[in-house]
Length: 72
Length: 168
Image (cartoon, rainbow over all chains, first blue to last red; front, side, top):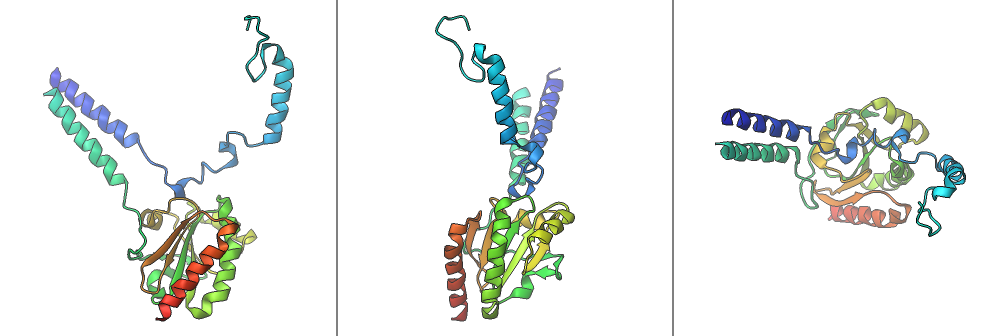
């Protein structure tokens, strides 16, 4: 049983280590794609945020809400 | 028993991790040779013996690389007669990406394709673009990461001093 645990641990360790890779600076082609950007279109984001804010303003929208009543 | 196996496991994992990181190039060390397919022809560092070589690692997806191309064209034209060569090593995995980039951003210097990244692995550029200025003695004189228009003069001075050193 102990041996089994040891082997399993070793296996798990080696598998997890193999899974760790470093993306080198010259391999960042896919990460540089527009689709990978957190905010690919700032104008679109502003527009969406504006709508969201006007709809959800009562709960604070995208910022911290509340008028001091403690209800949010 | 369990703890011993764990220890062995840790040693193995440490080994596996250390294999992945090759040593980076340093100023003063001999520039590693390369032999890559390129335009207009095969690019070999050995063929540029005795010349000052500006090796620039670039990629089609890298914005500052685009900015650096006109400057490199200018340097190539200005100092070629004094024994200066610019080599742009492209690190795109697909050569078509590089060729598309070159249509809009023409290179008037040798371009080499390192699609497998094997030369990048050896030179270990820290970012895109990274340039290595190799002196006539074949040693790395300067390493620059990134490209800003404000660095043009500083980089040119380094090229000039490398050329002056080569004449002695």
